[in-house]
Amino acid sequence: MRKHNFAFIDIETTGLDVTKHEIIEIGCVLTTANLEVIEEFELKIKPEHIEDADIVSMKINHYDSTLWKSAHSLPEAMKIFSEKVKDCIMVGHNVAFDSGFLEHAFVSTGVGNSMHYHKLDTVSVAWAKLHREPDLEHFSLRELCLRFNIKNEDAHTGLGDARATYLLYKKLMEL
Image (tube, rainbow, N blue to C red; front, side, top):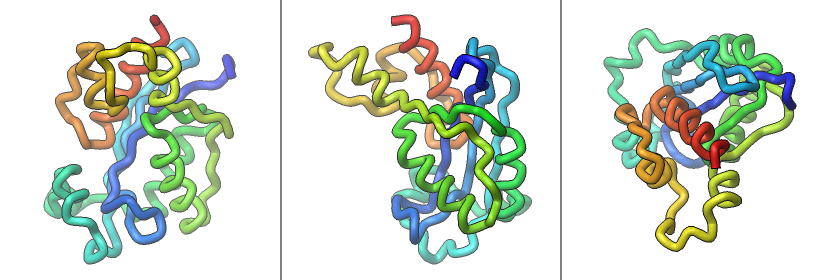
């Protein structure tokens, strides 16, 4: 694992159901294994079935169709994404959610998943290091950012949460 770069990834979706809802944004911070930032990028993806979107999810992720006018199609975005994250280890906050949607998108578009098969989850790392702390009840990205004084000014955007996850991971590795 030491020879692989990391891809700190966060996605925004039109809801929580991987079979019904769609990815509308991918944010990523690419780093070396030593956590030096190589590149940051964000991909907006035009939803094909906005009528199936969950209203609450759309409010949380600040969806505004005017900001998605020049968005990529899902196949275009997945090709770009796959090229950029080749051989990277995916790191996410509740990584199962993001990786489930990404795997579904890779399969549905026919684009190969080029990432390394290992994944790291900051929720699991935080639990392992902090579960005995009596004042920590929630392991949400918001709560952990508050605990470590990480400012996530763009919360619930792909790149904003990917940056926060990267900074959280660095803090957790210092414990």
